[in-house]
Image (tube, rainbow, N blue to C red; front, side, top):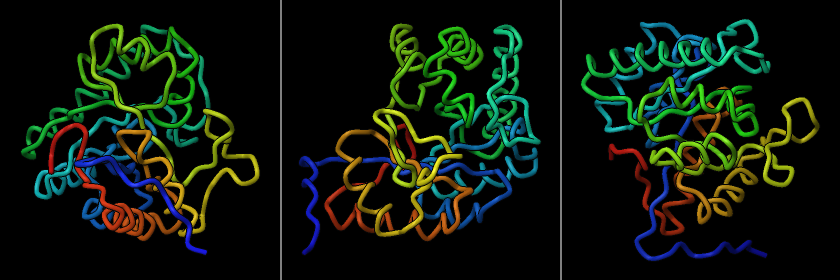
Length: 240
């Protein structure tokens, strides 16, 4: 029996984002599929040269660029929760956003949103102090994420916020299942596509992890399925 999914509302659009510049995937191939790029800013992964290359290709293809800010923890790929003083975290976020913003402008584009990475992403959903530090360090940029303290505080401050969902991750309620638990990563392409179609009506953006096996193929399959189901792919933050 063919599985059915709800038809998208008339003229409905959705964004497809991925983590780039992390030295673990084919950035150029992924940029040809997605509509927004969360670019690593050097604290969990990436280099200035990689940021330049990603921004240049994003500019050429009309893909929106976002700053994927992280704890300063390259050995653990930013996936270990750290207790960082608010002032320190604010300055670290400002440094990351500022670095990427300068590169983006030089390559003909701009940073149009901010999204925390890894442990910082999850910590700022529940920790109001760290959420505020991320907001204070990122100026007035729109914020991409899941419901929690970060988006609540951003909305209260008058900043635009955008909800995202994760087709390649399992959920426990409204939270992503921790990566160290069984079934946390959805690896079957058909399951990822089905999850994407279920999530699309509820979010502004769908995220495919760039460090997942088969990331490019999965992203392409998701995009194809969304378009076949009547969705138009366009970045929430600008670009094509």
